[in-house]
Image 1 (tube, each protein chain N blue to C red):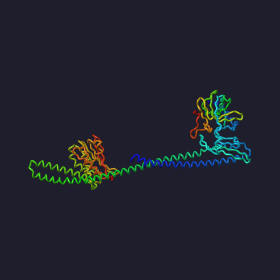
Image 2 (cartoon, helix red, strand yellow; image 1 turned 180 degrees about the vertical axis):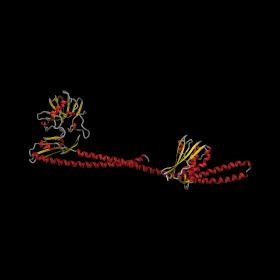
Image 3 (tube, each protein chain N blue to C red; image 1 turned 45 degrees about the horizontal axis):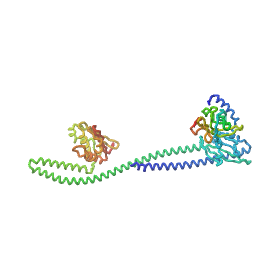
Image 4 (cartoon, rainbow over the protein chains, first blue to last red; image 1 turned 60 degrees about the vertical axis):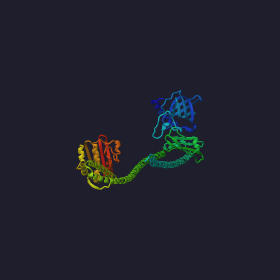
Length: 144
Length: 415
């Protein structure tokens, strides 16, 4: 995925929608409900997810085995450096929640693709892009 | 001091002190930290109680959950909070970090407060229930930043390491100083012991040799008189042989006298005099010999440096060194220099002779050590004895083929 000015303009436009997307009640990383899913990328979208935060990268994942579609919330766009392509296989570890529209969402903690693992949150769900501790600064989507 | 002793007496106590300090300090810091953590937790519990009372009234007045939590959105130290109904369904929640609400029903089910680690520091979690005036039960989940406490603990750790480092440096310096004092003291003690033993041995040898010398000299005197008598009454052709015999007896007597003089303890008769004057006297007594060997003895006769010493003995010491220098020199110059220092006065005698082999240098002041065919090896021994009796020291620097410099240091600096 490439970050072009149009992506940012889209981000700015989408961020205007944030107030209408009020924080949903279960929209947090619930460590008690962690699941592992795998599927192939069906679509890639960018949309605001949290108040006062930049737009997020959301991957629509199709689990062919169970015939389910998940919206995988990856990370803010600026943090994600890798490219996703439609049709690529993805293994996700994350916390699921269902929206009012009955959509299956997963907040990703780890994403594994092309043999690499991206750690997006720690074991408590703390977002990696929000700092690595005092003085260490923020690191961009790091491969482990 | 042996290495093992050094370890035992210096490093071991040092290590012991450091370990004790480290141990006590760790216990102390740990106690203080626990107490502070306890206090902070109590404070946070109290904060949670106040929040619960406020929320209870607002809920009773039918305020929506989102409005109840909104005043705390900008609270810097509250990382996240959640309001739940009696079935623990989240009514609303706030977090400073996207999607981060590390609420664990498993953890919350066990206790009402616990601490978790996060990349922004420790977070103190409080999970507790409250009841509204109308009897409904709610749960409040609060995640409070402990960064201030951690900063304080970090500061305390830094201070500890600074104090510990200073203590280590001071202790090392102290023990090193102590070690130096101790080794210096032991060295002096060893020297004193050695000197004492040497004196004892010397006294024994001295008593023995004086007795032997006395016993030999008596018959030698009789023999000398007998030879004199024989020389007077013997026929002319024997008189020369008898005279040679008498000379040999006198030579033996002279050797015994020198031995006796060497062995006898020195009694100093100190007086103040000009060093140049003494050097002049010594020079005169050896000048003929120097002229024969084409050696020039130079010194500054106008030097006003004076010294308090036994003039005769010091003269004898200088003469012995000069004789050695002269014997080692074929031609060239022997220079005598004097100087006054802060605590001492020095006399150095430098020749351009053949020099002394380095392996022989440490034995040069030992009695009966000589490399000369007709030497007895007591000249330099006696010189050192005289200098030591004055509380001074003598040293030499020599290079084979380039000459030797003897330096005498005597007490009494610039006056």
